[in-house]
Amino acid sequence: MTNEPVPGHLHGRVALITGGASGIGLATAQLLRSRGATVLVADVQSGSFHAISEAVGVECLQIDVVDRTAVQRLHDALAARHLAVDLLVNCAGIVQSPLSPDLLDSDVFQRTLAISLEGTFNMCAVFGSSMAKRGRGAVVNIASVAGMRSMPLHAYSPAKAGIISLTEGLAAEWGRSGVRVNTVSPGYTVTAALQSQIDAGLRDPEKLASNSALGRLIMPGDIAKAIAFLLSDEASMITGINLPVDAGWLVSGSWSTFGGVRESHVMPG
Ligand SMILES: NC(=O)c1ccc[n+]([C@@H]2O[C@H](COP(=O)([O-])OP(=O)(O)OC[C@H]3O[C@@H](n4cnc5c(N)ncnc54)[C@H](O)[C@@H]3O)[C@@H](O)[C@H]2O)c1
Image (cartoon, rainbow, N blue to C red; front, side, top):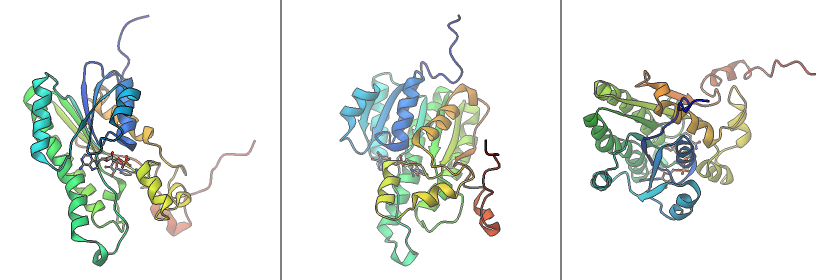
């Protein structure tokens, strides 16, 4: 037996996850911790911080990603403790209701873009720039398949498309500085946010699953695995990409013209 670290390990790395108190961010915090990283959860909601710290063994920090000054203060406070963030996951986001543009308030539009797009920019501008000065690091920004296809989400979709574009620019900006920047675009993932939309009758779980090639709903842990891969040295030659983790939703939509994707080819028995 050797003591060689297993591929994908994150020992010795400090990871910061925005939106880490819930859903995909929390699942990512758990996975990165299990792979050996020191994990910092940053979230605007502090109600579950104590329980998360106890259960997952991570430090929780309150931050509103929209507030660039607060983001800089967080960076400086960590630096004063000699905590340099090597891995950044930008998961903070809010959902919006599917509304026609005339019913979509300007403040909802602005808030959605502020948290998803400007928040991701703020975190990258502060923590990504710091990584670039140190010459190493990896960032994963969370967009969505909603940023890749037309949907009646006239604030959320543009915000997510903006994140995909931002990632490409930052990957080129910092590539020579040893910082990789990638996007993960989840499909419909069963988190509290989606569950509340299902409960309110705004999403049909049957349709969500049946519209994908694999015919299954995605769990937060499925997204976390893709994030962990892109953060790890296993992905050391990957930067600027957008990786959909969508159970094949993107490749199935156009099959509706032909009556939907094929039923299983598996022979009974
Ligand atoms: N669940 C899905 O089906 C799905 C699909 C595609 C993309 N996504 C994206 O994945 C990310 C996580 O989604 P989730 O489903 O886990 O949602 P979630 O609501 O469970 O988690 C989002 C977290 O972000 C935090 N947050 C909100 N505003 C913030 C702010 N201003 N500053 C700091 N933190 C803030 C919330 O407090 C919450 O803990 C989001 O960006 C979302 O758009 C989710």
